[in-house]
Figure 1 (cartoon, rainbow, N blue to C red):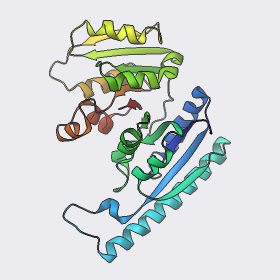
Figure 2 (figure 1 turned 90 degrees about the vertical axis):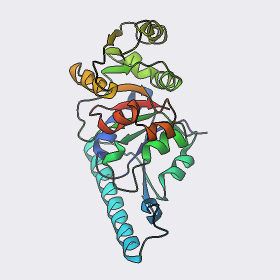
Figure 3 (figure 1 turned 60 degrees about the horizontal axis):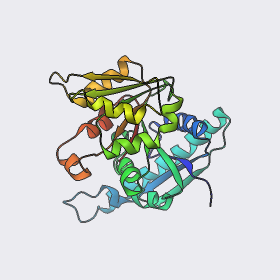
Figure 4 (figure 1 turned 30 degrees about the vertical axis):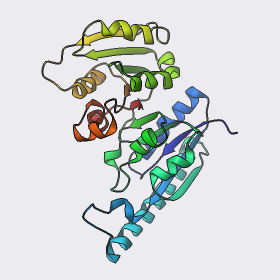
Length: 268
């Protein structure tokens, strides 16, 4: 059986170069190869609940858009490989990202992808497909990110199984980081004792602090704290209240996914 590899799931050219840069850094840290996948989705990916099917014009227009996106991804990967001196392979699938992620189940160490809300309609479920369909840890890279990866990491501490899974998944990065900041917001100070128990053996020199919310959302405070400390990654547990409840009542992870300008390191 082949060793698990790093999968870069490129929905479109938007943010693709940034994802490839981060993925190669991740691959070096883990000592694993990097592969790339792109899915040319079908018209069914954009059918609205009120529609039974797309019109012939809509279906043709969508198919043309998808072909253009695929050609652009191929060209971008070829150009990036030439510039970086790499030969990362690209697999192109037709169908949908949920089925493709099932194809990769058990073969992937982690998935690198761009912020889903920046991607074309029909490609905005990439993150859920990776996190929830196959349970892979994910590094989500915001478009425009160019400040490296893994030198200074921040952990958004709220003791939960998803966060503990994220810490376990990203232990090599936390151990290798020059600085690790552990931030808890609006909780009892005693929760930092649990954080020290989990992270102490991994990052002995980590910094721990508790912040008062002062009426602000946890997600916004974490993003601001990451910017202030020049963090190049935030470790979080995603959808700890469950995906459906998090969708109905937006939680911290959903807001971070939509608003973060810093890469997110996530497990569900």
